[in-house]
Length: 591
Image (cartoon, rainbow, N blue to C red; front, side, top):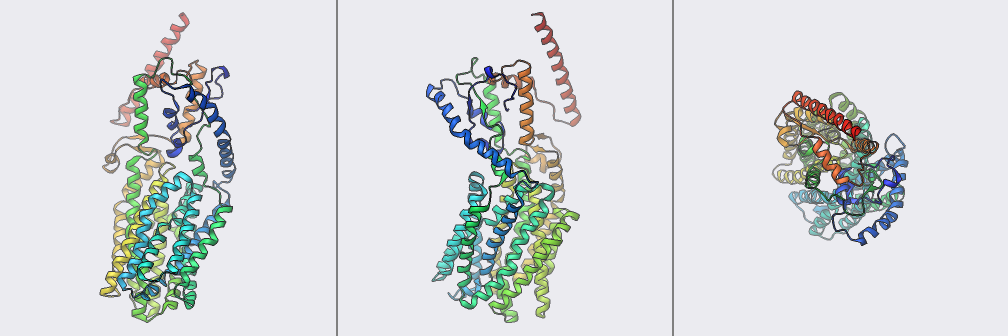
């Protein structure tokens, strides 16, 4: 509850800054419990309050000005920042795609088998998956920009290590180290989701994915050309590209406005008494504080049930699709060499054709399909394209095989855009990072599994990885179809800003949904209540704990059996409150 400006100056208690961790979940009440001094607070703590206010006041005001400045544009940040994120993602993806088609040939210089080639891709994805929660935590705590800088530096070191590897074991370790810092694309995606309104999110995320595919369009060709200088040259070039991007991020990229808002208190200062409460902390107030703590354990907005379903619905689709994608990407060089006798140069050019199909799809086709069909149904269409393309890769002559490869890439592009937009669309500011990182973790698990399965099957028959890719893409389509009803319902719940308290209430059919509201709505209600209490002469600053206990007594639980009974209960409470208010006013007049 924010203090209204109408509080008389002589009634205001000295001010104390909110705890910094208050903003982690966007809960406007988060700082209240920690901000109150319990009985027995020492005078040293009282003396610390003015110093804390002086120390943090300038920082908070500076942060507030920065948020106001960067949100002046409709996108939440200046358009140049969005373009810069696209450039960062493109350059990082370019560095990775330069070495991808050459890696099987590079590994074979150390005597690696097809299965060991698959392990090089898998260990990268495994390290990426394991490190993703850490990068997500660092991103939420220290900012998207700082994690981008850290990831770029780690990528540069890992790529240089790969280029200077002297054995297969050293190359395998270098791949694992590089995977730890392969979080640039994920952070860029969260940055765009933070900065772009929901109605424009699908288009802007498609553009972001287009930069990735544009990099894979040029990267393999560049890598193929660099391989003439040596099969380790693409890895060293990747390190150089990461080092080139690092100063660009350092100098020009602003922090995400959503992250800044999360880490700036909704009200810069919170009124708090310096001495113990005159009436002490009542049992009801303590119970109320415990209830607030319990509620903060669940993400507001969609609740745990909604968050888990959003991750499950799109995360497992991403898992199956990524298994199919990595089976194709990791083993296409092996297939092309065995079937058509292509060398590294021509394999790079062939994969560039697939990337060209992806770029075209993300710019012109994916936004159209998403708008017309919706994210979930567009994901099904993309998975079907992967099924057909994977099977067509096995065709002859080579022109038909290349057409199948392009169709598979087209389907992957549609599916990737639909999954990213769908996952972002089933979130709010409170759980967006959790859902998107959860989906990306499952996607990364697919990147671990795909090359292993592809390498094992290629050892049996070089055509089998593509048959398996078609099967996994079909599983992705079926999974999405089975979850259509649940995702549609979750989208409807999100539109109503409702939160499901129990998993069974959402997944099991009908159930009561509690409303939590956005931080802005909570702040607006808090300001309204504070202003009302001030105008009606309640000293809510001095007797804050007792006021909270009073509010807990005034608002009894309402029936949740049905909307009708809930409304009747609401009307009864309101009628009773009016009677009590009238009686209190008459009693006060008599006195």
